[in-house]
Length: 309
Ligand code: ASP
Image (cartoon, rainbow, N blue to C red; front, top):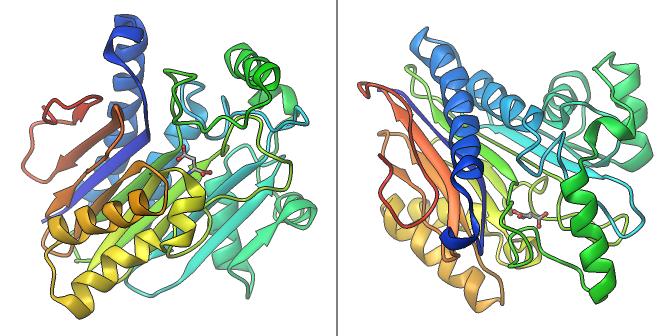
């Protein structure tokens, strides 16, 4: 058994506000990410490589709020957060508020493999990206006209607009979870955060146990109101319910999301367990999501309440 699940953000994406071309472009992005991960898993490769590959595809896609196409801070800059975790070994790496890494998830992996640390942030993380020889990109590479327009609208309203808020049909924090043929689990998440966020703000995505988690039982990647996911340790809460409460993945995920809601946030998550069971719950208008499991004819993706098909 092996499989991969991806998300491209959860939010108040109304079907009526989304034109067909945009929806199809997002579906194509999800399929490309699933295909990249599936190729690795089908060849017997590690779950960690698969989730990294899927997230790189989505970071490079300007339609998602990660890497190219990320949202702007109030200061008009782009600050990127990413993390990945290997459930088989417990190894993990993360970066927060990086501005130069073309693929923040690759920087997170380099932190895991080339430093004794787990999380590097801000200018120190950017210095590490350069020193490690990772691909860098200028600010213009990440910036898109659509995200700049979102910032202008948010500034005009004096609001910090959650990426999954009603202001935009374009969501986009991205994540992937995978189980490989050897039974190893891994999770990865990458984001630009929230439009008009304070510079220096770090969300749940790069924080292990909040937006990203993997162990021997389950791998989880979250999207939504980062502060609520942080305050409920949402990704780890799924794993804890399974480990100590004996919960099955479906119940653990639903209950963790209920806690996020009780904490004043909304969003969604993806999860896969050691048996290859998958979940993709969300309590928002939609969530870009999809999966490709061993035995499936191809990637299956969805945006709204429809089943993944
Ligand atoms: N969770 C992300 C953050 O708060 C945003 C999102 O998923 O839309 O940074």
